[in-house]
Amino acid sequence: MTHPSETNPANPQKARKGLSRMWHATGYSVAGLRAGWGETAFRQEALAAMLMIPAAFWLGRNWVEVALLCASVVFVMVVELLNTAIETAIDRIGPEWHDLSKRAKDMGSAAVLLSLLLCMGVWAAAVYYRL
Image 1 (cartoon, one colour):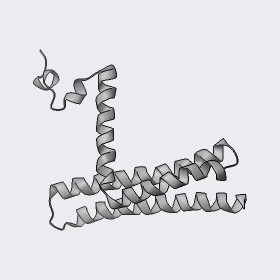
Image 2 (cartoon, rainbow, N blue to C red):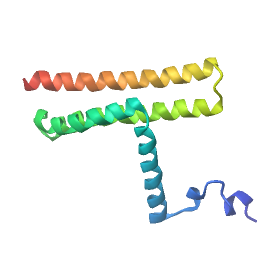
Image 3 (cartoon, helix red, strand yellow):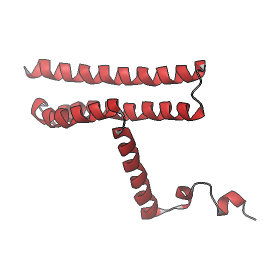
Image 4 (cartoon, rainbow, N blue to C red):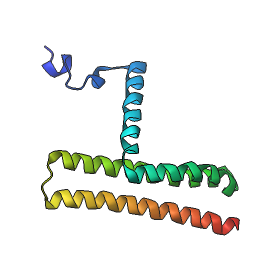
């Protein structure tokens, strides 16, 4: 006998297989990027990435350096999206102040700060050695 949740999952994505699952997952990812674009910080980072990623091909001396420069920029955007997801989930729970909500949001913000510092460090080192 099958469990009711196995025949009628709460999330239809879980029942999809193969290319259908990949197609739908891609749609969800694009929707996430669109939602991220609505956030000022993500939009600023994405615009900076549009300049920095092409610049990485000039600044990097080999494929490893180019990859590290590009990865550090993309990493900032990934962390920003995760931070926004945390903030959105916390806000869904409720608008009232709670110490654990503040702590979660502060930790997400700290993660963004660390990713920005990492990116700046990688780029500063590359510029220093290039010039």
